[in-house]
Length: 190
Image (cartoon, rainbow, N blue to C red; front, top):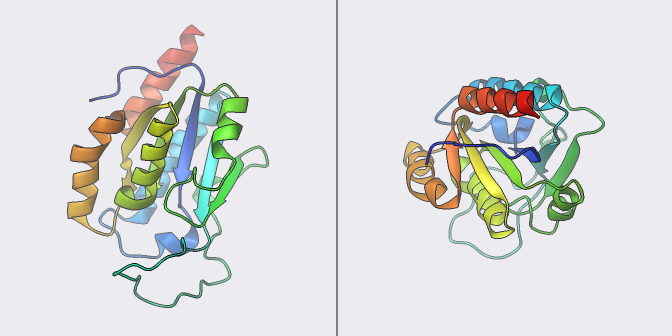
């Protein structure tokens, strides 16, 4: 479903736009995703709406059949947010060791303390961190919107499957510009 409305109490959740993750090969270049994320961040700051920056510093425990290629040791700057995000002291930071940003974090409590009813989610990877966070947000009762041109994945198939098959079940989707236009219109009335 295309984006139809934004609640007055909306937060932006930026998933894993960090140096280590953005060094992996992706379908859409991470720089393009970062530019769109930056535009949304600026729009949220203009309207004094909350921003949550999420990074990942490890993996959830447990065995899996598939392991990530490369070292299990991360570089010193692996979790550093991209400079394009222009992190500010009032941005809420969630550091996770799981796919979804709500797992073992204060994210839900933080959003509820602000009266947030809707979240806009973007980032890398569409079918992992973004999708998991969207599922969790939906399960926590938030209205979910996904900025589909401000996300990417390591696989085109996984990226498209999440966007076309999963996201419509979790909320609404829109482009960066559609969300910014609706945000401007919503807050011009308030």
